[in-house]
Image (cartoon, rainbow over all chains, first blue to last red):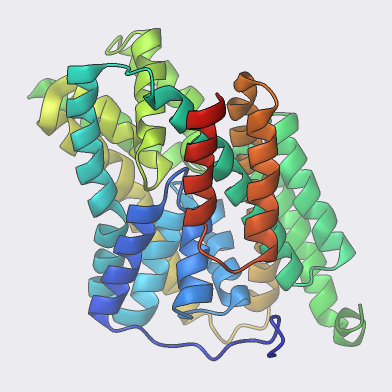
Amino acid sequence: MPESTAPHATVVPGRLELFLGYLKIGLLGFGGVAAWARHVIVEERRWLTELEYAEVLGLGQVLPGPNVGNAAVMIGRRFHGLAGALLATTGIYLAPLLILIGLCVLYDRYGQLPQVAPAMAGIAAAAAGMVIGTAFKMAGRLRLRWDALLVLVLAALAAALWRLPLPLIVLVLAPVSIALALRRARRPAEAGAR
Amino acid sequence: MTLLLQILATFSILSLVAVGGANSVLPEMHRQVVELRGWLDDATFAQLYALAQAAPGPNILVASVMGWRIAGGAGMAMATLGMLAPSAVLAWGMAGLTQRLRGAPWLKPAQAGLVPVAIGLILAAGVTMAQAAQGHGVLPLVVVAISTVFVWRTDYSPLWVLAGGAVLGLVFL
């Protein structure tokens, strides 16, 4: 059995594959697309390694806008320039927008049916677990050091528990975390040992 | 026409302050759309947010639903364009910058430094979603726990837990 943490060989997607992959991410992305984007890009299609994806997502996080949407622009550009960025972006938003238009029309017509709310509540709970599980999985596979894990936990606490504004969290934690990473890089021997 | 331009302008500004994505920009969206512009009332805003959550895809599309409610199809188009375009252009520029700086010795560590912040904020989004799902008693928390372990420890498609969640909700809630 191959070791699950070993870096997989990555595949360069063609333009159509890029579009279809992002179409799938958008279409399946109930409860937000973060978990699905990682599942499709890293596990299913292997366009990027776990680390490459996490790095792109990290950049997408500090920029304004949805992190996965920003990542779509950057991953699209990386593989196919402007066409790639447009294809990935169109792919991720197209299906959800069409479904949303349908939902808006249905909502106008039927309001709230009694069966809809409990099923939606169940899906919402499962989606929450899906997002939490994705964070655990990424942290585990990247074998983060204790100082990086500390930053991770602080970011999570600041956003979920203390409800601090996100720009503030990013402005404080990103420089600290980058400084820690730079210090690790300067002492590679120590960084390798864990 | 002026209304459509106002929608475009309002959501373009929201796009540029949306560090952290849809959930973090929601309070500011409420301030702009409900309090400043008076386009929607409180209850409608909450209902439209739930509607957007029910659809698949990025949660940022909550802007599209608001635009639709304010000014129909054209409003939806303006709100979507405003919400997506400015941040996408920034991401495009950032991608170019990182490609040009590829050889720089500090780039990899700098990017690596952003990784724990990104994962921490994903975790926070999940916890926030779990807190919102909590209103229906213990069962949602059980579903959250099962789903967390399933996605964390296996490589099966997450679609299974979503389907399971829907069935459990339908039967028990």
